[in-house]
Image (cartoon, rainbow, N blue to C red; front, side):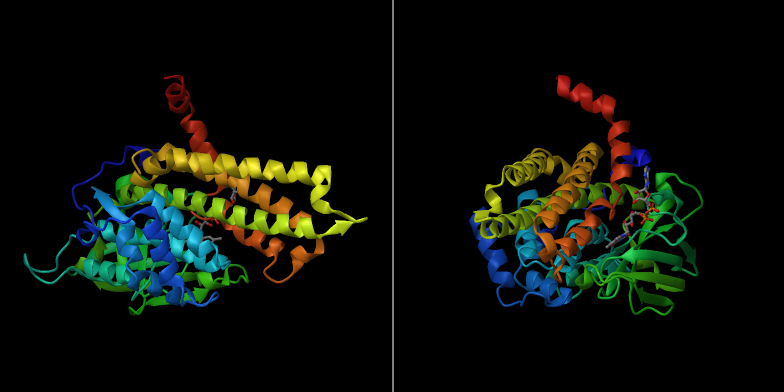
Length: 403
Ligand SMILES: Cc1cc2nc3c(=O)[nH]c(=O)nc-3n(C[C@H](O)[C@H](O)[C@H](O)COP(=O)(O)OP(=O)(O)OC[C@H]3O[C@@H](n4cnc5c(N)ncnc54)[C@H](O)[C@@H]3O)c2cc1C
């Protein structure tokens, strides 16, 4: 990822014009979120959750400003959105909302200023798709992880975009894409020329119904509502206006928005671990051994307190780095946050699952939640890779701490 650090922002995008002047207090925002999802039953398919958020104006109000690489999510609003969706206890739906709200939709937004045809003509395909996703009437999947390379080797990706006969041709395949089976629009990271330089890649908007696109479900029972799948692109032909943003700026845009996605992952991890800790505490208070609630056992209390401290640390890190990570100005914020999630979530959720005894094995119980939450340490960059980036940035970080 170090080549991404030098990515040069370009002038092709700004704030979403529709979001201007939408001031809301944190309380108003929480009420808006609650109203948006009030009539959506828990377990409803992800498109219904997304549609409700769009129709209530939540998605449009999420991005209050923008920079040269696209819309910037308001970190506090993003955190509250994820807490509200997480409270419904459907981790697949939360993952689907997270990826779209934190990275896919903003990446689409980074290319929406393009126009088809002459000046003043109809919005480009990208602008039109962005608007549909923002209103909740369509969904977008972000397809970066490639069939031709390990997910941890993003610059090795094989999916190609070629310019041919005035249009685009996309060929290749993507794996483990959240919402691959439910999204009308696929945002595909493709290489425009051989090489590993950050300017060798571009984003392409591929409508899921285009000839040559195939979708296969990923073989897993976990995170069912995330509709995860694998995508194939067999020489898929598209009009030229399906290129998202400036040709060759794909990795720069991705790095900027992955930073927001990493913040969102940390915000979700805080909400999820907090929810499971609360449930575990209630169970321990009600479960007795020799007439005493397990909650009074000294070992149990110490372990539980350790979990609380870990989550409190993650929560504090979110607060500290939220603004920097959301703006994507500094890649160390995202790497630190995602590393911290990897070091926190599984430890806490494993201890909670153990403390729930056999009940943790119930369908959708703490053991399943723990397995589903493992996506926090893999999706969007494995923990080891994030720690590698933190080590790369050690000199800069230590220097900052001395000032
Ligand atoms: C539920 C789910 C949803 C996903 N959604 C999306 C999506 O919407 N869009 C998308 O593009 N991708 C998505 N992914 C893919 C995800 O981003 C990749 O799985 C991730 O980048 C890791 O790639 P990989 O699975 O190929 O693992 P690999 O790169 O093969 O790595 C395997 C393991 O090797 C170890 N490892 C890797 N690199 C290092 C290193 N540098 N140092 C030490 N150890 C290392 C880690 O333990 C890692 O988990 C999703 C994955 C899951 C599980």
